Image (tube, rainbow, N blue to C red; front, side, top):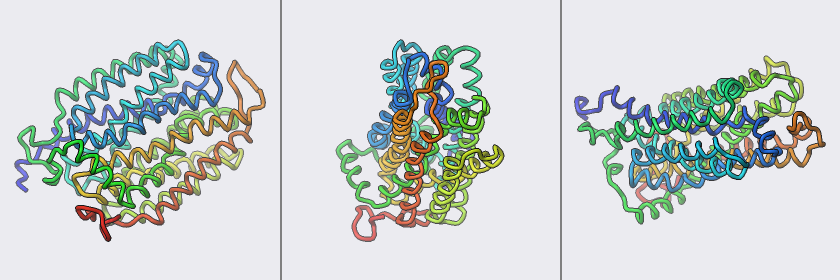
Length: 438
């Protein structure tokens, strides 16, 4: 390949960076309710079940969008998807910011989730076209790092902004940010370097634009690969506890049972997310270096499980030990990001966007299920205690709800055992038969 015709790094990173900016906001929305639990419960007069349901509306539409997004990423390309997603996210954020009832807020959250659902797969698609394949897993980890930076912004910074200005003005400002990002994407981002007169890094078969009928057939094809299913279960089992704890229930748990102020609790849950992001980069780089995927997935799943058990079920841990376990849980859970390089290598290259959408749907189903399920169990065990109009749940209630997180962690361990190694290269036959089914 003639290096003179490859896109300059500055242009590649600018294109990727604009897509990453939208992914930043998607992660922000994912965990923003964690620091608004008390204001939302008091303002809308709701309990844990309704709050969990409100937060999960993001995931309902996000998960629903993954397969269509994967197919459309292969058909339309990332530029249109990211632009449309930014605009719809702006509309949903405005609706949430002006909501007069929880039903309207739920609808706004639903729009935000569906719009955000296009960001990750489209960004993976840009990565495959604008960067060499040898660093694909590393950049996939960097994507998680950018996203988690958005989640961290929804922690302590968001807490202080809400305290100073109220949650509605803050969300109005976020809607404006969505509009600016969408305009930048439309003006600068292109699906492939060839549209800027540079040579693409993507294989020739990924330059073809399949019809929607071919994409539907491709969906059936990717679902016939065992690795598609196992990687999706692994991703959901590993990311679900992180999203449920750091994204919603960790802050009230820490404030109630460790006596920590909201700011300190937000800092600890943000610590998990930061390490989740760092772990994604580290695990991806480690996997690329050793040329294997499966051992890294197995280590990540096992360590995460061993860390979550004491975090959730051993009461009154020293804060330093609690923080250390959260660091380890976050770093190990970052191995989830390897699954996207893994499934991409397990199916025909032309179906990279479709299989990425399926896998991302699996990763989000963990949070989609756990957030409302934990809230439902908390309400079942609520003893009627209120403080400032907000329900207070005892340690036994949290333990009952958090047991579901352990079950999901065990599922990720089991999935990592049965996944077939790809050795960091495409292993799929054009059609999955015999040895091609991975």
